[in-house]
Image (cartoon, rainbow, N blue to C red; front, side, top):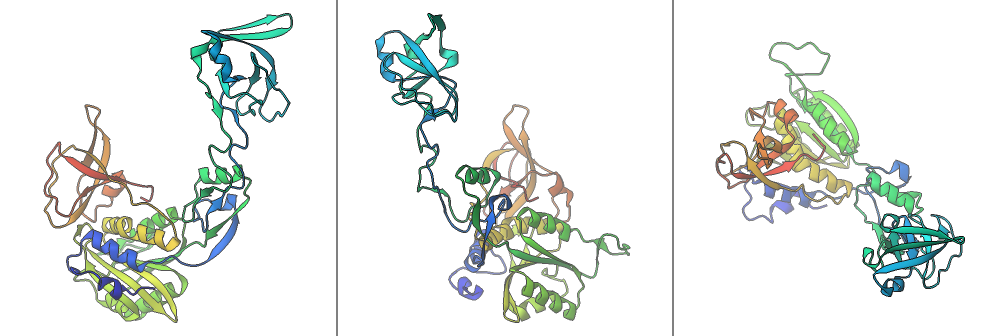
Amino acid sequence: MPSLQSVISCLSDYDPTALPVAQANQIIEGVAEPVSGIEQLAIREALDRVLAEDVISPIDVPAHDNSAMDGYAFASADLAGGNEVALTVIGTRFAGDAAALVPAAGQAVRIMTGAVMPAGCDTVIPQEFVQGVDETAGATRIRFAADAVRPGDNRRLRGEDLAQGQPALTAGRILKPADIGMLASLGIAEVKVRRRLRVAFFSTGDELRSIGEPLDAGCVYDSNRYTLHGMLRRLNVELLDMGVVRDDPQALEAAFRRACENADAVITSGGVSVGEADHTKAIMAKLGDVTFWKIAMRPGRPMAFGRIESHGQHALLFGLPGNPVAVMVTFYHFVRAALHRLMGASVAPLPLMRVRSAQAIRKKPGRTEYQRGILGAGADGVPEVRITGQQGSGVLRSMSEANCFIVLGHEQGAVGAGDMVEVMLFDGLV
C-alpha cells in the first residue's frame, strides 16, 4: 500500500492549512486501495454488491432473429411489386413456437412479438399498418401500402443486444435490479462479488448525548451517527456503530483500536477542529500515518485523513468535523468516493449541471462552497435553483430540505440573480 507521506511528497504545492478540494481528493485516491476478498452469490442475493469479475455472455441475445411487433412477416423483395402489396397468409407463429413455416414469394406469416422470424423473411409489417384483410375461398390475404414499411423493419437480429462471448457486465459494477434481470436472461444463476466493506464509526465529545438520555445543560443529541448510519446503509457496507466516545485518552485509544481491528475504514465526527480537545488528534497521530487538513471549502474545513494500525490490522481513517452539515458535506465529497474505491467499485464522479440561480449568493474566491439548494422550474419553466435558507454548518434542516448542492468553485466570486451556476444533484445518500 502507498503511504500517505509518499503520496503527499509528489505534490509540489501541498499546503495542509489551505488544501483545495481537488487536491484532497487526489491524495485520498492515491492512498485508498481496494480490499481483497471475493465470494460467490446467487443473483438474488447480489443486488448492490460489487462485481468481482467480468460476466461473459454464454449465449446470443436474442438467440434468434425475431419480430419486434405483432404483424406479418415476409420477404422484403415483395415490396418491389408496386404501390400496394398483397400477400397470402400461410399460417401464424407465436413466441416460443418453432413450427416450420417457409413462405414463398407473395406469401406472409402472421407473427407475434418475440416470435422467431420464419425462414426467408426479413421484414414485419405491423398489423395496424395493414389496410385490408380478405378471406376468400379459405385463404387470407392482406393488403398494405408499399411505403408503409422498409426492408428489415421491425426485425430484431440475433445477438444484436448481446453476442455470445461479449462482456455483459464488467468488474467493478455495482449490481442494480436491471443487471440482475439481465443475468437471469443469460441463464446465469450465480456471480462472483467482492466482500462487503466493513466500516466503523463513532462520535466524539463530552457534550454529546444519545437518544433516550437526559439532555443536560450545554449538551446536544448526537445526530451525526444517525446521518452517517443512513448514508453508509445506502452504500451497502457492513456497519460497526460504536456510539459516542468521551474526550478521554484511554477511551479514545480503545475505540480507535477496536475500530481498526474490526473494520476497513473508520469514520469519526468531532475532535479535529482548532480549539477542540487535543486527545482525538493525539490518538490518531499515535496510531498511524495521519495528516490534519484545513480544506479550502465551506462547510467542512477541518478534516483528518490517513491510515491507522492496531495489532497488525490497518484501516483507512476519516476524521470529519463535528457540525452536522459539515459531516454530511465532507462525507459526500470525500468519503463516498474513497469507500467506493475500497469496495473495488467503478463509479463515475457525480456530474455537474449548469442552471440559473434564482437569487444572489455571496461568495469569496479562494475556497469551494457547497450551498444547499432546491432545484426546480422557474416561472418561465426554465430550470433554476435557490438556496434553502440559512447555510450555517449546524443548520441540519438545510440538508433535509435540499435536493442538490450549489457548487461554487475555488476561484469563483459572488453570484448574481439570473447568473448560471453549477449544481450537483443528490444521488440518494442524503
